[in-house]
Length: 404
Ligand code: PMP
Image 1 (cartoon, rainbow, N blue to C red):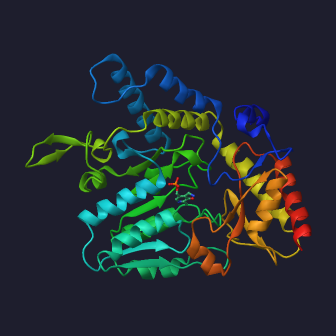
Image 2 (image 1 turned 180 degrees about the horizontal axis):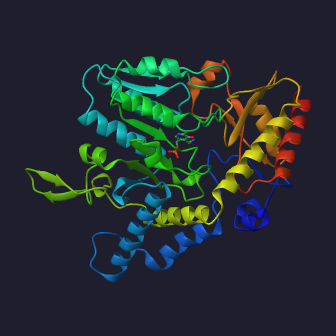
Image 3 (image 1 turned 45 degrees about the vertical axis):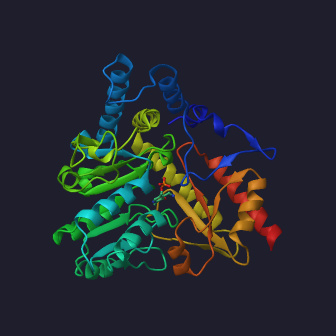
């Protein structure tokens, strides 16, 4: 893996902020996009732009073919059995809202339960919470220990309360914990309970095989895996997607319409009402191809080295407290330093050119669990370098000295 060749594909990284070279470590929020992805979207608007599925003319057919090709590429990437198991959405949040709404209309009855965990992003918490509250039901929450590891004994107990669905993050966006999702899916399936995996933080870092995981649903965002914003996906097993009712209504998702009755389109179109973001879907396909062009095992090892180095070097800082110290961690490190507000730290290192995220990271219950207002989070991508890790750690050290 030649890091310079890779970095050359991300011109945005090659800039100065406040007169310092940019060190971009906010990849869990969104990754930068390689030239090939930007070019693909541009190419679509330059030469191919057209509404899809509806036209008999050349451009419409070409755009339709390209869009469906992108679906197949994504399906292959996550090892789905069939391309119709992949629904294009705006991203993880929309995919989860789709599922919560469809479950509400088909599966959920008064007083039912939904199971999530204590580490969830608001996107994998609030849609379920709001939905279940409308039915006077209950949200069951798997607790975690001080290292940010889920309590699987408790999970087993909570499954006995027969939730209608389990929805869990593959990797925590605050703690970096990699949850044992395969095991958790197996446990839920023993009781016939379907499982949703929130893959927002895993898909860019690890090869995903939905058949091997045996998850019923897998949701993700393109913009966190080098693709454009406004595109993402919902994978669902065919048997589930067939069973669930549509989420939104309008053009494209219908079969026949009269004033009395509407019948719905086949999969996956039943879940894709209205004109989709075709250009972004093609960009997502190119992002997938970009990842496939690399040795993913090598990328995984490289990113693990970046993370390990950051953790080791940060550990030297007096008063540092890591938030999330699970053995299985990936992609990011979160921390606070005694007596220093994360926001102040983040603001000062920003002036040194280092972009990290501070705050609650859309996971307020995690902050409450650890009794903190927020953390500083550095998150890595395949274009980051060891030198950047050093610049980041030195910036944190200097900022801590200034703020003490
Ligand atoms: N789940 C997790 C674990 C996330 O990290 C994020 C984004 N931070 C989301 C869901 C929501 O993703 P999006 O905003 O792209 O819909």
